[in-house]
Length: 297
Length: 237
Image (cartoon, rainbow over all chains, first blue to last red; front, side):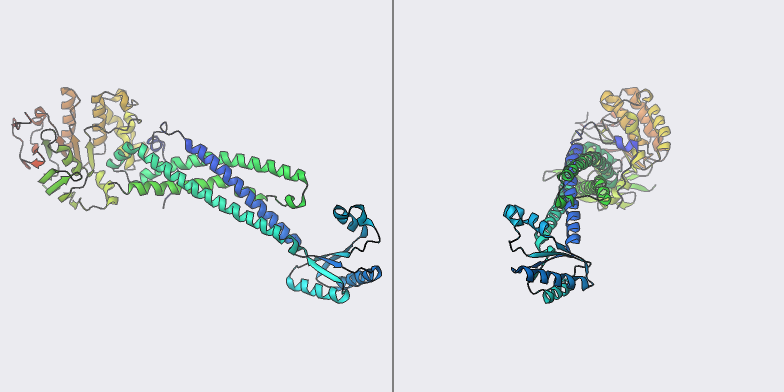
């Protein structure tokens, strides 16, 4: 199926340009603005979720929950020794008492720094590969060295956030598809209205031997250009908005929200939306016009 | 001479009303000139519509260029229509296109390169006396000028059949004669011409032309040679 966009100047004059209000351009600008925003949100959450998964996949926290201080310290040393012997462990760092007190401050206030408070010892572990088998081996070795140890995967704590981000990504993808469907529907209505407006001209063209494809080409070209111009405008505004939101997020300094970043590939993808929608509009216009014309003699 | 058009027992009914055309049978020979006459409402325009494939008959057989036009697939209609030039009674010019662009339409529809469009269009404009109205748009043209543009558009593609519905209705006698001369010239080049007209004065201008007379949807004189002067029917007089 040919979707030729370029027609001669004479062909372009065939449809009376002054009759249309060119509302299509503005409608397409709004559609593309919303679509690109949804797509940017989806790409951002996808990148954040991927980053989070990558960061958390091999991270563990070992707690030595032992109320007797010297036993806790002995088990901590034993656990550290065991961890350092394991090839899966890239890094194992004991969290210092001062740092623990800082972490407890929101809940316990300055009492968290009380040396008599039996706070579990904590070891931050980074595994090269965060597979289930590796985690199981590490857990087994730590438990053997320190019976009071408890091993927690970071992944387990953060998985609701990761799931939420994935949900947002899918929701954004759904929105993009819905907007594409709505665009096709708008084009369909516009093409039918255009056919009605230019009914006399089309009838003359048919009587002179014009084919349905020739007539469809006139409409698809006009609708494609309206979509492209409106799309470029809407996409530019949406990209400006995304950049502005990005600046605001950076200013927040949040590690989690900092992951909502778009790669250069994502920006290129967003920039391709007007072209993709123009092609979609071209095909929708062609099918709509051919569908209507086929019902006439 | 071979038949370019053949109608056999053709009937045409719009909706559920009475038949507009009934049992119409005739043949048109290639390269001949025909006048189609009849009172208003006799069915001339309907017959022409069947001829230029704007309408399919309710019954009967129509053969055009040796092929069955009744069952002709829709996708083959454009090819047939390009071989037929039509002057519509209401001109049907595209109002937002200039006289030049209106006349150029059949060539452009047929895919003639733009470089080969200008010369024949200007020649036709000169022929119909509109060289000074090249860029004029139909709403700014008089009825007669619009009719001349419509005629130029119909003949520019050198059609095999030219169908004209009251082509001289809005022009003065001099211009009517010039236009008829143009039709005659085309006819001499091999185009089969069918002119529907009320104007009995025109009939004598083309020697050797045939006349078909319609009355209440029936053809009275399918292949009659033109009589001079033709005797009008009571309701045509």
